[in-house]
Image (cartoon, rainbow, N blue to C red):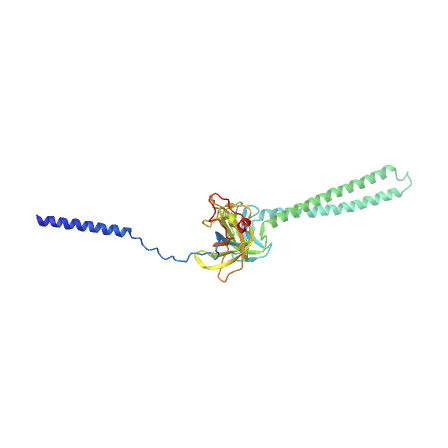
Length: 330
C-alpha cells in the first residue's frame, strides 16, 4: 500500500515536470528564417517607395480589327520588328472582292456610251452648222434649224448624265477598294510585336478583353511607377529614382524623370492584371532608363525608390498640413 502511494506521488511529479517542460518549449521563439533574397533598400536618405512596371516608350498599342471578321492570314510573329504601315494580319475580304468585280464591270459600258455620245454630238453639231449656213429659206426652214439645235442640246445633256454616272461608278469602285485595304490591318507606327494572340482561321471580335496583337517600341523602355495617393505630395517633379527587379535587390538601374501623370487613378498592378480595380488610388510617374547590363523585359514589375527632399514630416504635429516643397526648404 505504501509502495503504491509512493509510485503515485512520483508519477504526479513526473507529469508536472513534463507539463512544465512542454510549456517552456512552447514559449520559446524560433529564430527568424534567413530570407531567400535580400530585400531592396533605398539608396537615398529620404525616399518614397513605389511599385512600377516596365513598358515600351510611348506606351503599348493594342491592335484591334476595324470590323469583326474571319482572319485569313497572319503576316507577323512575336518579336518581329515592323515599320509603320506594315501589314499585320488580313481579314476575310471575299465579299468585298465580289463587289469590286461588279463595280469594275460597270465602268467600261459607261465609258463606251460616253464615247458614242461624243460622236453623236459631233454629227449633230455638224448638221446644225450646215443647216445654219444655208440662207435659202425655201431649202431650209427655221424649224429645221431649231430642231437640229435642240437635238444637239439634248445630246449634250445626255453626255453630262453619262459622265455623272461614270463618276459615281468610279467612286463606288474606289469606295470598295478602300474598304478592302481597310481589311488589311497595318502597324500604326514602328515597333516590336510583344504579343500575337490570334491565328489564321480565328474570328476577330470587336471590344475583346485581350488585344489581338500588342505593339511597342522596345528599343527604348520606360518605367511607370505608381505612388500611393497618401505619399503623392512628397514627390517633387524632376526627382531622381532608382529601380530594382523584383526579388533581385542587387539588380538596380537609375531612372530619369520624364513626367508626372496629372490624374490619380485606381491602382491596377497588384497582381499584374491591368483590369484589376481596388480602392487604393495612385499617382503615376513616368521614368526613362538606359538598358542595364542584365536583361529586362516589357511588362516586368520593379521596385522603385524616388528621392525626396528632407522634410519635417515626421516631426510636425499630426494635425499640421503637409508642407509644400518650398516650405520644406524654408
